[in-house]
Image (cartoon, rainbow, N blue to C red):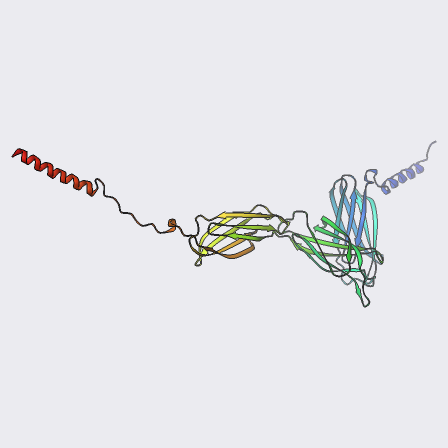
Length: 368
């Protein structure tokens, strides 16, 4: 059967349209698996079953049918069986009360793979059952105080799943969760980062609490920090022979520097020893031992031990004293010994002279 030209064009158009609307078969195992948004920020998590490149995510904040702000994320590479979470912060001044919608769109090679929506209200939303009272992140981890919401009738305990995220730029580089935390009062929580951090680099943290009773609710809060190396002295031993210091790491920025021991007496430096410390991260400890070039003679000395950071700054310092009762002849000023006269000593020389005199007298008598 022959098709007229108009029908051929229509058929071709339909084929092209179907191809554009249908995601590529090889991209069916990548999907949006989690979304969240409020008036301050948004996050989106995708899961990929295979290795893909050049993924684009678009987040749009919508109110009353209008896009107020949009954020785009570019994922150059995602490995097989991997989750990637992207985070963005909205910059909305004087937001209006009402219902908001965040639209999440995932694309690849110009084709839309998936679109998802997250709805929330602002200004008169229902009060969640928990709230964050404080969040303090640093280079070792994060500490949080989570509390139940209190009314005039009191507060009710709730169960919450708490998720902690470490963010570099717009990408979550580490995440961990406390499941089914009982929140009956102000509850302190903490987690350590289990990834290495870069010194003097800025990071963000994000904490999300999810509750399912009396109704589903999610709250999130973020805080920033600058990663710094950190190590502290926990034990110190010293005597007239030497000293040792135990140093404990307090940061996921690797501490790779020195410990300095300085001995003073009467405000003068007697000896200074600079010892390299093994690399330390959070929870690692090492004991550094040194020996003075000579034993400290009897007396009282000052001792300063400093932990010098990667940037040359002082991370920790201990000042103490060394009381030495060491006495040794080797430390006393030696008494000069008389220098012997070269040649014969005086006693043998005297005997020699007497012998010569006697021998000379005997020879005179024989000659007479």
